[in-house]
Image 1: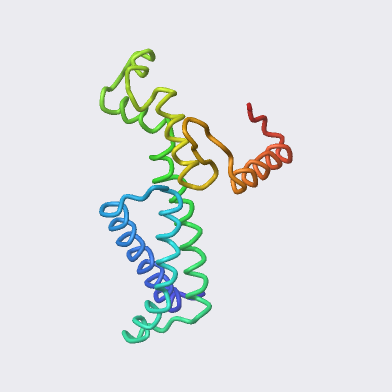
Image 2: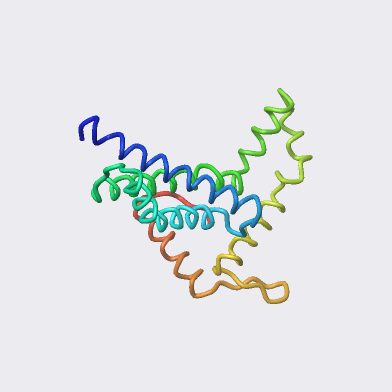
Length: 173
């Protein structure tokens, strides 16, 4: 790809990113998602669905971009947006490390035992959050005080069990 062809490609790619940011911000600011990772990926897919419209807009402004360049830009965009979805909103939602480093950033230093005073860092809060996520994603159901695995949950558990065996990752369960 020469420099002349790179400008339309880069412009199209940046336009995809801008559209994603707008969709993503509106989605998360005004329609709080139940499952953060799924919502972020859905924002990416919505952006991709808008790419034909963006292609038409580019042609109106006499920006000559080939279908192959559009396809490559969409593929690169999707890969980067999924990586962002995992490392950004998903980490904020699920990680124990994120609140810890934010607390340290605000306080400068802290004794290790002081972390246990924070409500979002205790094990009960973390387990409740994970149970809530599993119910929302359809892996578990709650009947009274009992949690039960669904067919989908059984499938997911089998996939992860198999993956842990294949990769020789020791999961404590």
